[in-house]
Amino acid sequence: MLSRIGFSLKLILYGMIISATIAMVLTLLAMASKNFKSLVTSMISIFDPLPGIALLPLAILWIGIGEEAIIFIMIHSIIWPMLLNVIGGFSSVPAIYRDLGYAFGLKRNRFVFGILIPASIPSILTGFKTGWSRAWRALISAEMVFGATGSSWGIGWDIYLKRSYLDMAGMFASLLVIMIIGIVVENLIFKTIERVTVIKWGMAL
Image 1 (tube, one colour):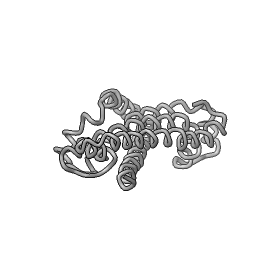
Image 2 (cartoon, helix red, strand yellow):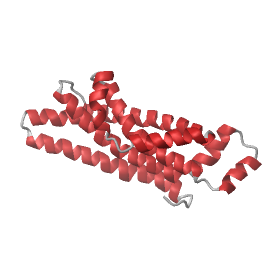
Image 3 (cartoon, one colour):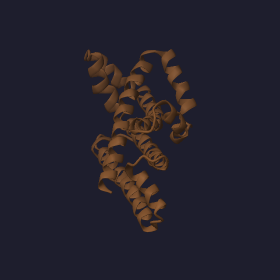
Image 4 (cartoon, helix red, strand yellow):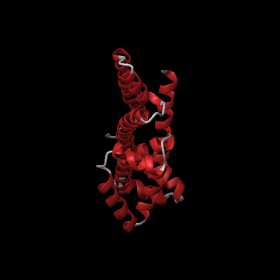
């Protein structure tokens, strides 16, 4: 069980890191070009409502059955709410903060990491939380489907395996693990980040 938990958490960590990197790059490009921002906003409107698991058949056809397909599904689940919140956060940074950065002559990188990101922490954190919850559901669903095709990994596959053996107690144990992980991530990791940033700095979430 521990190895399957570790496998699932590894995949979702990869998905979060890749999605955060893509979201940051696209946000910076969107802030530099109104046309590109309009394009990204349109893409968010189109793809954000689409459940990640709905892309599973395409992922299998394009990528095959493996970790890459699951990561692809998670990136789709994470990237759109993250983009929406990061762009919204950057766009709503008070003008006085921007003017302060310009007055100190901050270069682009220092302006982004010293002004835009800290001022947008509440929005960025909201994007991460939404992305995490969507990715976690998509991950478990994809692992269960891949379990039906003969691939063996992750907590979702463990549920599928227990169902095959009619192990009701084992199924509920796996479901309990999924819920506990969700609660721990939400109330320990995200709440801790919120406490040392948003609350400490007196920012509204």
